[in-house]
Amino acid sequence: MDDNNSTEITAIDNLVTGKFDEIPDVSEGIVGKIKAAAEALKREGTTSLRRLVNMSIDINESTNSAAEMIRDIREVDTRSQSVAFAADELVASVSEIAQNSESAAQEAEQASGTAEKGIASADKAVSTMENIASSVENASSKVSQLAVTSSKIGDIVGEIDAIARQTNLLALNATIEAARAGEAGKGFAVVASEVKILSNQTTKATEDIRERIENLRAEMSDISSAMDQGAEAVTNGREIVAEAGDGLREMSTQVISIAGRMQEISGILNQQSSASNDVAEGIAAIASMSNANVSQVDTVVDFLAMANTEMVQSLDTIMEKQIPDMTIYRAKSDHIIWKTKLAEMIVGRTTLNPDELADHHTCRLGKWYYNLNDASITNHPAYKAIEKPHSIVHECGINAAKLYNNGDIAGALEEIKRVGEHSKEVIKYLDELINR
Image (tube, rainbow, N blue to C red; front, side, top):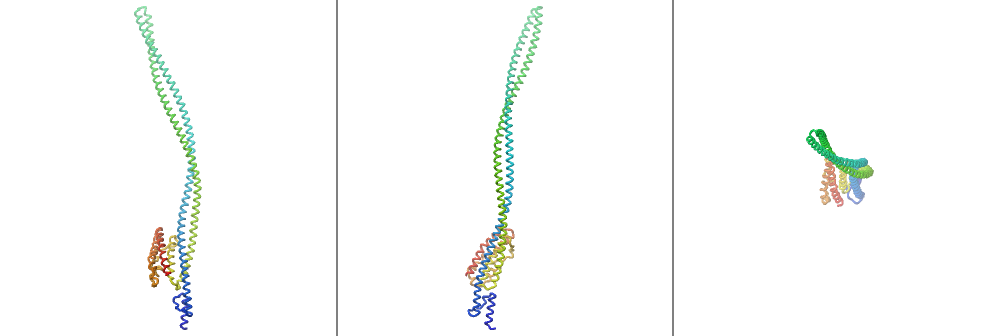
């Protein structure tokens, strides 16, 4: 076999295996045509690589968005469940309050009835007290009249006493005159003596009557004073009972007003109970839909993950061929996949060990970056600018994994947010290198 045939066979093998750059750069003959075919395949491969990387980025960005959506929907679901539980408790509380309000309204009505009975009893008591006052006044008047009569009797007794004293004096004079008359006056003296005895008896009887009348008058005075006090007490009692009746009337009015308001409140609470039931049912429906949405989004993420796996396999196939800047394209894809893994970690779809995560030196982009000898790239401003944001992306990603594993979800989310911010810079500089 001559050298031409050997060169042609080698060129064909390189074309088949994708070693396009190893085909001799000639423009004539079969090898020239093979070289032209290789260049066409390189261009087509570059176009396919660009499309696959863009599709991979789109899929991973969609996965990131879906993961964030899952997180948000799960948060909504959790809060909806909490709100639904609180709404159920609210419904129970409102229902219980409504029942208590109805009971309170009924008790208020009963209190109103009791107050009305109390008012009637107070009115009767006032009427009875007025009758008692009238009777006391009549009795006091009669006692006063009796006291006046007793005074008149005392006057009569005084007159009788005066007559008795006069009679006693006449009897004494008669005795004296009888003594002067001697024997002729003895009979008259006996009569005078009897008259004196009778006069003395009358005086004693008069004294006894006077004493009894004085006692009677004293007792009548006490009775009159007691009757006056009783009348005053009855008057005070009548005023107190009247005030109590007025208080009961006012209380009855207030109780009736309260009963009306309690009925209104009870009606409003019954309406509120119905509205609360509607709210609780609505929240329960939202919670159910949120749960269903989580399941649907999970299905979408599963589909995206399968599509991304196939996309990565296609990229690996193209990576076996010599395509210009294929490492940069693949680095873009890997960079977005890195963000996707962090997002899946937050929603619990994957577990990341921070000790096993690659840093900015050991990842695919890092290995390419720190072992590159192509001056057309290393002298480019984007090449120098990419190192800092790239290192921050890995640093924040590893910190996010540590924080998440320690239960600090908020801290992990903050680190992932920083990953997203600096990741945009990395992609920007990679695009500038591709478009150099």
